[in-house]
Length: 185
Image (cartoon, rainbow, N blue to C red; front, side, top):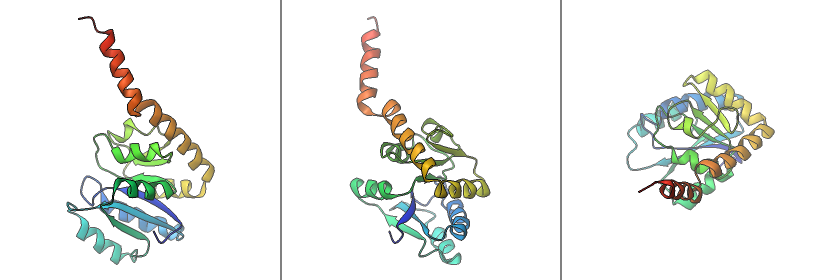
């Protein structure tokens, strides 16, 4: 990543991941914070909006601001996320968003669209923000988190706590075993 400060997003350029909306948000944030870059990971084999995303990036002159990163090893992907300022997702819908959970495991603050799936991970105002898919709201919230390192750290610490409480596999296994043991056969 060219930028020392950057925001990370994982998701193939597609309708679900709302990539074109993301480019619109990045354009506005870059005007206010030109020293912050954006890293879009997971530009892989099935990226139906990739041509449109590339076209918008060129149209807005964001070639140096947005790095499109193809599929990487899991370890390399987590290194990108770990070094980022915080994690961002603007998805239109999710199941259980593993990328958000992995960012939480790394102690990252999260800014996410307020959709099913993200709501299972992000507690608005505790470990990040859940936002409606409105460009101006995303831009304002991203800018606030860029300038407030203390808030990023607070959200990040809470992300790790929520991850350990709700998503750490060893805890899930113990809870499942407890359920089985409590059943009367």
